[in-house]
Length: 264
Image 1 (tube, rainbow, N blue to C red):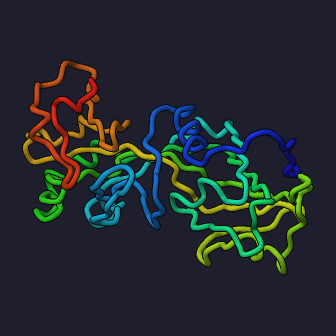
Image 2: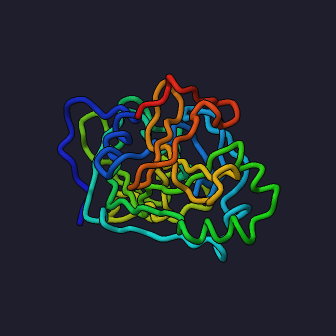
């Protein structure tokens, strides 16, 4: 199927575009800055607008001990956004795509996302590994920082470029680099001479989990799925009444939360 759009009107704001997608699939914090690897298990700190990365996923949540699972219920969803003179939300997350030297404000970049997949960590695996296998250094870091416990990502997206008359630009191996700069580790191809199809997963948003020694059962009960005033808002995920805890005693280093910032 060809990639075609009726262009016109206002182009999407990149932040609003990705926020709308994540609202549609149900409550995720959007990545606001470029990152190379943010798969589930990555340990992070800082603020939502400027995350700091402390350990890759396999350091404290090795895949052979903590399994990853995938929910494909959103594969039938498709999203199209257009951006004037830039590649929109592809400058965030893990796609590592930017505009080429010939991409100007006169061009419109159309990005189509085909399906959203939810990646999440197996919760009993996490508890078993925390109790019986995780080293003390990882536990020390988890006492101070959060980790990506669930992610929303797309496995495939397409890019087409239109000129100032809204005519789609034909792309081939000789001119595609004029409009798009794609990192060497990306899996991509040109389809139907007009569309660049990316087959490398692109992470759009995440849930931040909390796993601490003071939680004696070592279960991931609290996670942040929303933010307020550039701070993570943690809520209890349990279906039963939680044991009360002092929110002000918990902090992500450089991003402390106080009780009056908590939104129940």
